[in-house]
Length: 228
Image (cartoon, rainbow, N blue to C red; front, side, top):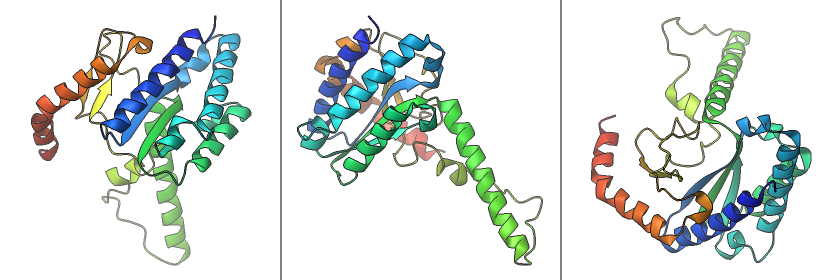
């Protein structure tokens, strides 16, 4: 049955959010739907869209975990690729939780890291082109050809995930050690934890182990970041 595993996975996510809140983890990002998933059969894609719409509506309920714990929700990705009902529901959820400030949940949908990077570069180039055009129209001089027109900060501010700090830990279940096109730009100096369990089976034991392992190597990671 299409989406059965995703329904159980959603339940696991709600448990993980509760653990994160209780242990003071402020930012959580989940990879819900890759752009690559659109290559699946139309029936499966529609089933997943229907499930996503249903779960977004659950987040909007007054008694939902995001409202109980004061969690602000972002949907990150190329949202124009979503069908209209899901896209509008995502926009409603972001608006409805905009005043929540105790924690941040980012849900990556219609997302791949490569698409995010291309998007950020395109936006940076368009912004810089507009600046140069305005400068020329006001009689100013064009920038020197040796000037770095596009800076790292220009690209980073246009990333889908610009509102959140880089992750400390990425959890990749099923024993996989590949990131599957997820947060490639942001994960250069984070800890990758790969428990053997499938995502629907993940529980507090795996969550706590990830935290303890991160704390063990945190000094090393902080030192590497300072060397950049």
